[in-house]
Length: 269
Image 1 (cartoon, one colour):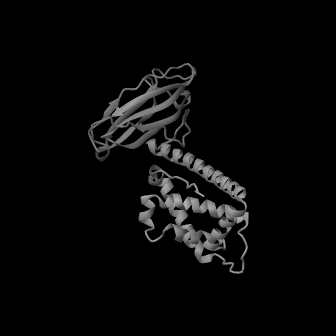
Image 2 (cartoon, rainbow, N blue to C red):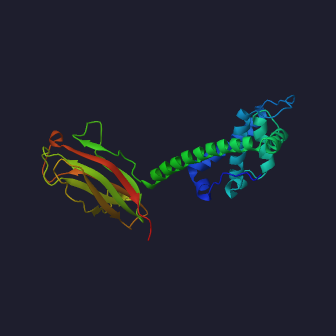
Image 3 (tube, rainbow, N blue to C red):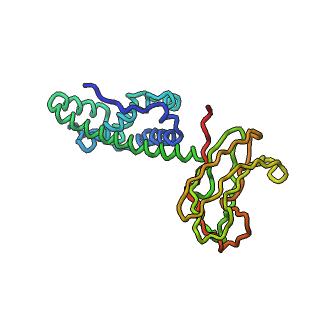
């Protein structure tokens, strides 16, 4: 009988989130063998409630050990050794597992297929959860914005409406956000003010300002995009404010919302 192994593509292994998950999994395999309880007197078949997780972990181990990254970490561990660790974790031996699988294969193959289907369904669920977690992690890494994602004016005194974000001066970025300027706002020609300056000369260095559109004052949300490209310094500071007006307005005369702020690095052409 050919057993399906959970396939883990290299990009998942290389992902830092998954790398940590793999490391923890292997440590658990190694640590569990020291505290497992052997059952030498048990000569029967492994119960289904134990057999399913054992098969699941063995299939997961097969997938992990096909990765060169994992091979480099655990050069002394092969598939058979890993199987023994897993079986011992549940209080059995690898021979117990072989005996049980052999029995089902000869005497009750339909039951064995059902066990594997349940196991593969569980592995597929784990893979789906992992895919979602990796997607969230990738989204987090892609967004270079470190500040608050939403601002609402009037801004409470405890919040700083201005921002200062470190960026790479040799890369290009797109800043995106949604701005809502309400009709009772007292500003004239309100817009964002954004500029970049060398991180090593923030007080005396030359500023590079970026053109920003005026906000539409109709009480409806509008999306804005601002391209940011400097190409002067390796390390820069992106500074500015999301609310700058042509007239003097007090804090209480401002009525606006800036939401869903993102700062994404553009892929090179």
